[in-house]
Amino acid sequence: MTAREPRPLPRPDAQSYEAERRRLLNRASIAYLLDVVTLARDGRHPLDALLLSTITQANVAQVSARADLQVELASAHTPPPDEMRRPVSINALASSLRLPFETVRRRVHALKAAGLCRIEPAGVVVPTEILLSEPYLRQAYAAYERLRVFHATLSDLGALEGLPAPTIEHDGGFLPLRAVARLATDYVLRALDLAQAEFHDLFSALLLLEVVRSNTEHLGLRPESPEMLDPRGFLYDAHRRPVRVSQLAERVGLPRETARRHVRLLLDAGWLQRAGSGVIAPAKALARPGSIRFAVENTMHLRRMFAALSQLGVLAIWDDLRARPAT
Image 1 (tube, one colour):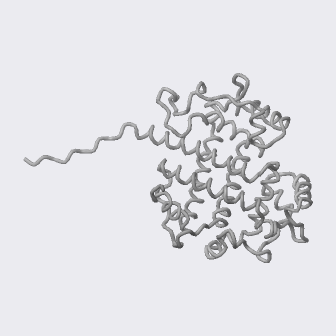
Image 2 (cartoon, one colour):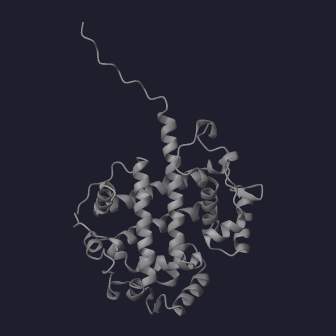
Image 3 (tube, one colour):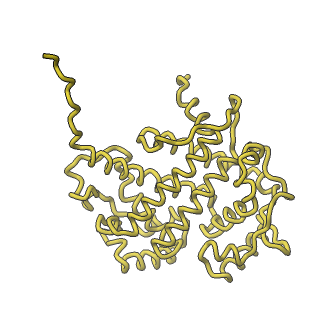
């Protein structure tokens, strides 16, 4: 009698493993999103950074839509020239950012006065000379490196399986700085729009996401022990470290009174609760449909970004760097 092949045993912890991976992916993606927003601010008010990013992205939308132009205009030294930039109206900016027209008009004129954009009859443009400046390139290189580290983190979590294969190969040493910046900015704007839709407004959304990060930053991306998790797979609130409003204001780049006002709104809406001298985003808030929708749709936007990066050959460059032995 021939012995039969042993049947594979079902993996009893498969469900908890997947919940763990989603939890760590969400933690890593919120940290990445907030870090990139901080880099884009470069000391400015969050609204000014958001406006500059939105204007820049709208100016080169036709480049982002074409793979050939993405490659041709990919490096640090090849920004799309001014004649390729399409102005965007203040009304379109206000509509896309869910902001009052007058707020956007006032801030755009202040950005113009600071020499960071032009206002033309057809709309607003961030000129090429700004995108070749030392401050912009410094910020772009930092954001590029942050995304490369984020890619390594997600790869280690097994969250990037099944991406499309590269359609382009690059020579060694190629650094697609601007192509990566365009794709990353598109993701960040989509994620912030999603957060605003779920969490009331831009400042409330940024503050809530910062609370979520600050509460669990001390845990890193290591899996928690089972006794730290409730039956739904959420971290028990006792393991969340409260964060003060003053710390939130500094991290998000808002005046303290503005941060305090929006934190009160979040407390009244049940998104936050007081704990000691600070606040936490409790498990019951993170289990709300809005929180779940944000996590799921944000993951979809992330995969879209990484799929585009893979097709452009960027992830192959990064994977090759990771595979090289340390010197």
